[in-house]
Length: 536
Image (cartoon, rainbow, N blue to C red; front, side, top):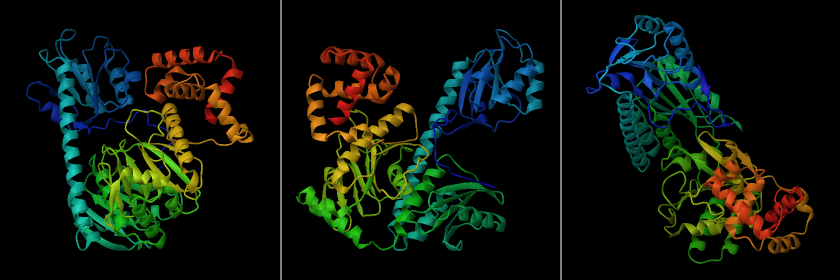
């Protein structure tokens, strides 16, 4: 009846593109194309378009596409349609002339038998015109969805500022999704409701779906399903109090999950317990830092730790993506950076009442303002820990080491080793390296691997030796060499990790060989250089 949202273990190879699908009927209605539906219905969604003249297109299809062909190698229409249906194609478009003057009757019959929509493309319409029309429709749908999500975010934010914010947010959510929104208490009772009434069967199914989540550690953060003829979804609120948001709608739009995610963040903040003394101390320390106090004097406000630094890239591109990730991971300390929100230098304290937008930091309780660099200093983090990466800075989060870091859908994460408050800069660098390895290996979550033989060597002596050995190398060369060695000399994976061309990697490694006057094919040399690079 329902599906739990499970942690991501690897990118989905056949995932659909970010643009919403377009119904075939919208393409059929295009006046300039002259398309004609010969079999099936026009309500199927099209995710993309593909042209193939292969006798068996199955290996080249991903599913959900409009397959276009002129039938150059069409010999057995029944078998051809069976393979297209098995591949998961949404519809088939057949172009008449120059191979066929009309669509073969056997093809029409096979499509009708399998329920595969068949579209006739007239001679005057090239396949490229059909593809271009579909991409334009998808772009328009994407723009509409972005506007819809943006307007919903503004509406929810406005509702959160009203005198009775929780009912107002639920009402705004129910209105935007044209359904019903329910805030469930930990015991499963309906605490607050908004929107239209739903059948008893749907209400019961939604309550059961919310019960799947619960406050248990490591449990799913969301679940979805169907009941009473409606689409159902449930989301666990942050804070660990067992509150759950339930939503029931007639349909599920592409942006509905994002809109509900914004409501989850706002409701998590609005229903959180009163601010504890430790949170107040942290906010006061941030204000003191912004007013000129030395970072060393206020870093202790974080507590003794240990702490885990996490770097992340991904999200849905909305301004609330970083806050949603922070809520999912169970932390209030997050620097949204520029990689997920599109807003450079945004620092947000989700539960601590601090937020900085466009490079500033604002203490909502105390009215103090300053720069986002202040938060970096307080946490002991280095904004340049990305190793010279020219892409927007990643989202950075700080979690108590007791909180398990888990993979999150749509995100790539790198986690440092647990460190004390005085060693957060080292944890930040570890998380940055872990994120680069995760991106290079296309892994959802990579953790820093600490210890080993390097722990047996005096750090100061190792650093002094490394400085002398690596002195001929510039920082870009040293970083390229480090990544190249960490990826076992793979040119392509190193290029992906550093976001540069593979030829640039080859040139830099050749330059390193010349400057160091060492044979990088020698495993002993590689080992020595690796230890030196880690000891810098």
